[in-house]
Length: 259
Image (tube, rainbow, N blue to C red; front, top):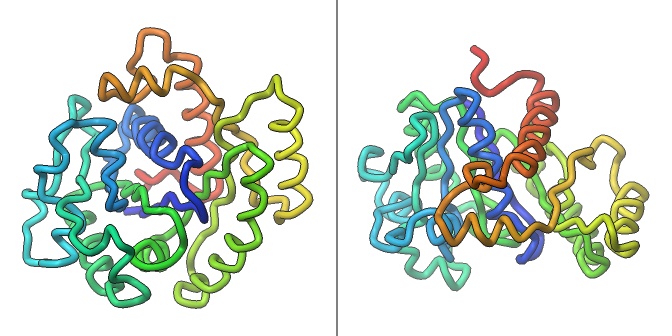
């Protein structure tokens, strides 16, 4: 199984939107995918199922690793696409825990997911590379970083690089897949210039060619509890996530389903 953390230095970068639709892009080509809501705010759950706060989830497992996986995994209408809610977050909402204290339990969680036969575990994390998010990133095989295409977002990049360096010491095998621009508005010069600036700051292999547009379809999809590709008008945006999936497979050196 391949595990990928979707993480960012700051919030509001479209991380959950990317996680949901990227997970669907993998699942729709037959890759058995589990999307884990590792953000105490429960953003994935709020987007896909309104009952998410009632579900046992990831943070419950951190508190009690004896919880069986069948209590955590929630199937969707697509056979290859399942979810784990954030659960009852407790003190994690205030940033409690983490900083290495839950590495063993995150590893145990991923082992249990692999034993269920999943090919890919995609983990949507809280913003900031510290606390439980740091433990998740330090445990996963790879990390994907969304970055909004707005000038203010550039200011967080140095801290992001510093945080990734720290986590690679904890996890020397961590594959930094790169930065994916989100909320891109190609008709705005400021939005286009962000991509140019990032190319000057980041190693060239760290910036994805695929950009996620700012599109009102994402709001409609969330209102209906669906990935955007399942909307009647969502085929164009779905192609964006299919392209991102293909780039990730190249960076991984294989599709997550390859044995």
